[in-house]
Length: 505
Image 1 (cartoon, helix red, strand yellow):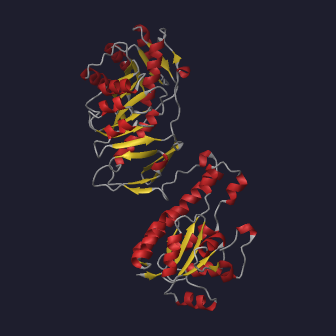
Image 2 (cartoon, one colour):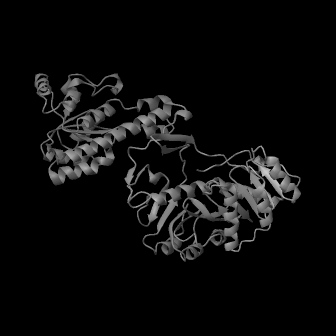
Image 3 (cartoon, rainbow, N blue to C red):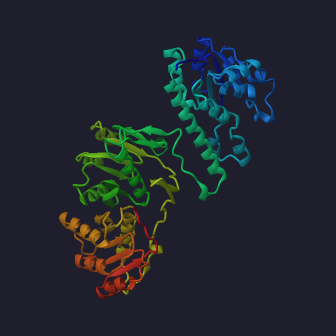
């Protein structure tokens, strides 16, 4: 069913890009009703507007808290055209039918982020606006609802190209977005007023992007969020579902390191990572960990990418590179492949909660933000780790924290020698790591081993010793911890416990 716009109700906070819409409504002889500052803005464009106060016979009261909350307003939005009783009451009470409602809510989120005091934040909780949005969205069969300034462009196209005539599908789509805006707005208020334990991660609203597909081409995919807060996309093709998973894993991993570090990730796991004094050396050593898996991977560094490093990086095929900045001539090199995704990572604050769908519901948990440092390491063996081993234990433990369980990481001289990932037994994870290290000719003599969970038996420590490992880090907590400690003591190995398990299922 097509709808011709005849009466519009406009009440917005942001007036940006609204002028062209007002002029098009005027061209189409649409009667405009408005409030306060919005009405003044419209009349400043030499377009007439009827004040809501004139319609309701009530002024704006309570310092502007009550302007539109009136039956003549909501009756005009919610009336059903085919319902005879509705139309009888509309005629009896002289209520205009609003077939276009444009609302842009008070900037609650921006006010919170600005550090404003509590009373000012509370005043930015929109009551009338959110009610108008929900009413218009409910009655989408007869009403076009614009619930955010980001939708102004679509409305302007409708007015210019189709003289304001809308289809049912167009109105239904806007109604869906309107309830997303409403839901997100309520979530922001809930999180502000509630405690940290009550925080909700919002999955709808402003930042909803349809992806090319999901994990596989036959699956549909969508991202809910605002990627512009995390990075600037400088070059390359559209981000995919799998790209985003790897990018998330990469950013969380690199956040553990303060020293110059380069990492290569594949399927959410690090296949190469190293910390060195320069970006170039970090890259070369990280790549040497597994140059085969690096093909088509995601690269991330916590320092600016320079020209010399970019020349070396460009020698291999990779999907994504992330860094806090890029020298101009380095960008020129990296941009030579049109599909290569280049992301400039911004300082960010990521959510403190994680959610995932499960069965017919959602699991929620606190994010694993525990960083185990040397201070947290309790030496439980007769042999004390050397200073170099302690540094490598800390390095390896950061990596194993971000590796799929069951996980084992072998490291030496601040580089990843190899890892065993996602195995059903810890022994298999260790054997996988040792075999991989051998394949790439990594010397494990003097290496350290990190485990994401305790050793239920001493077999892993025995196998690690045979491979050349001299120091072990693990959370501890097994009733048989002493068996593994004994193996270390018998073989002149050191072991430290952190007391913190880092499972990643």
